[in-house]
Image (cartoon, rainbow, N blue to C red; front, top):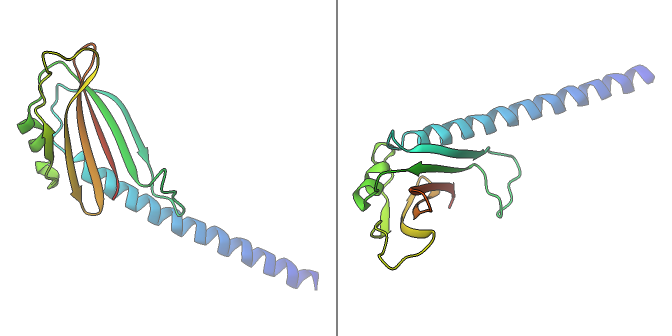
Length: 146
């Protein structure tokens, strides 16, 4: 009887580990495809990366913290135009609709949002925000399931 229970326990552990491995492999593939798609964006070479947060695909995702998702930020010392924002998505077939002029208003003081590009592509909501900071511009990209 102990041998049968031991064999059943071993089978259960092997099945659980196999299922975990398969699910993890599928999650990693979804995450890799998602990151590869976003890496095709035409980010200008003179933008200095500040941070890059990738939340990988998971079996259980909460709506307040969706997955997969990406949050990237860059610092730019050069002006960014509406056309620049629109062209960033072209290589990835992401078409940004831009709100704002991307120009700092003469009356603005402190950090100010200059323009925001929105796009929905392949079930993902993309948002590219250009802000005027104390030094230069900051560009933030957020991509999450729509």
